[in-house]
Amino acid sequence: MTPLEREIRAIIETEGPMMVSDYMQLCLAHPRHGYYVTRDPLGAGGDFVTAPEVSQMFGELIGAWAAAVWQQMGSPAKVQLVELGPGRGTLMADALRAATGMPDFLSAVSVHLVEASPVLCAIQEKRLANMAVSIAWHRAVEELPDGPAIAIANEFVDALPVGQFIKDRDGWHARTIGIADGKLAFMAAPGVLFGYAGAELPSGTILERRQDQPIALLSRRIAADGGAALIIDYGHAESGFGDTLQAVRAHKFADPLEMPGEADLTAQVDFAALAVTATRQGATTQGPVPQGAFLRTLGIERRAERLQSKATPKQAADIDSALMRLTAPDQMGELFKVMAIAHPKLGTLLGFDS
Image (cartoon, rainbow, N blue to C red; front, side):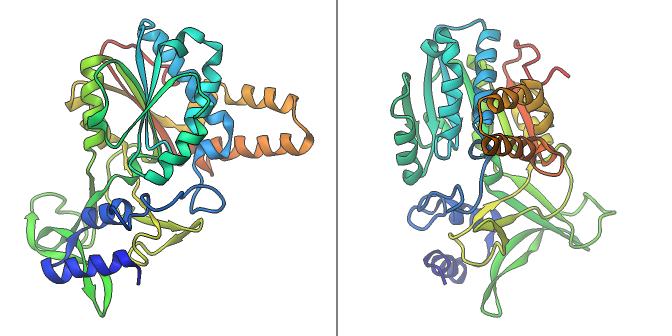
């Protein structure tokens, strides 16, 4: 039993079963035992690999996208380049390197990283130590200074807590986590929350609703101060039903209720719901489009060819493998999607014009 599970059991025994969103929040962000607080989860020695770790091409193209958005904004003298959940700083390092060909853009940029993990902050600081831009760290979106911003959130939203609701014959109940037969177990709270929706759906149907306040706050400041945000994550374009909560440990799927605090917990992003959140704050949205199509529009195939022209045969094969992983429909190309949140006066952004 992990230290976090002992605490979770104590809470349940004192207060009763907890909401799935509360469980997810504790597992990922508990101040002493939270998954992201205590480790570097990325890479072969971690639990999963994100697109920036697959290939430099990903971050380079995101950097080019950011520079293009800056030009579309009218090339303001000052702009914040923001990343939510920057991991090891790999994406930002590659993006800034790609932007060296646009010195006016780099001179306008101040980098702001929203990161709650002290472990990852230390890695980011080391990775970005020699970049010729000012860099500031923030624990939450609320701490970002005012002003126009271009923001990137790659595999950030999927880790925001989701609440779950389960349908029974009498209506919808909160899905909770309690203790049964000595183990953590999913349960249905006794009270009916709403009974009028989805009458045709079978009992046991799961509905998920994400706590997306960081995206709401980011959308509000973009609508007020100008700029755009790029949301890249795995998920579905239209709202639906189903249990998408999953745990990953050592690059394999695991039981979300086993070893809390020792596995990554995520749930698929409902991009339609995310768009509603953004538009309610006065911003507009573009997409979502499949990641593969987005990266091809940005020129990933041409970038791969240029890298391969200077590579050894082994390096060329690795580049080709990375290209397939990022864009192929049966890998990240279709499941991962890209959506932009933009100031209403910005036109169609690069990557969303097809």
